[in-house]
Length: 182
Image (cartoon, rainbow, N blue to C red; front, side):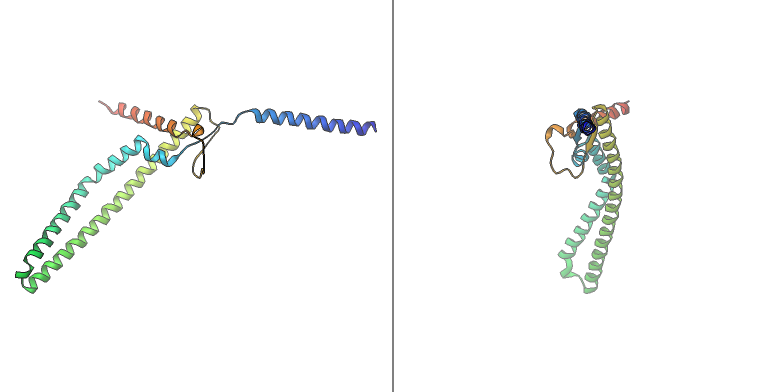
């Protein structure tokens, strides 16, 4: 009976010891935060810079497309104005010319759009890399154990570090601009 009581007492003591150890381990706070990557990709200064770069890069092509469109509109208006005094052969030739120019314009638009999409994807990839680096840097700097994003249904503002990461990205953008000044 005594050995049975000792075994029971040892079991209770072991359970109590394990409970205290587990409670101590749980008492150590795990710092978890969330970040809204879509917001970062939209509002980061680097995103605005990339957008401006793409606009500047593709402005000449856009001006050329607008010029061609204006020329086609002028040809179409001229055709409508003068078609009553044209021969059937002249009308057919003008119509074919306008249709061919419209097709050429559409092909050029498609080509420019494809190039723009390729460049936009390149810039987005660079931006995603910068955002990931910024999230990691803020997480390490502020001592977070875990930073979550994508697929978060709800979070309190108190654990959302999106503004902190945006500030980090802004300071990095400022540093880069200051390095590029003469």
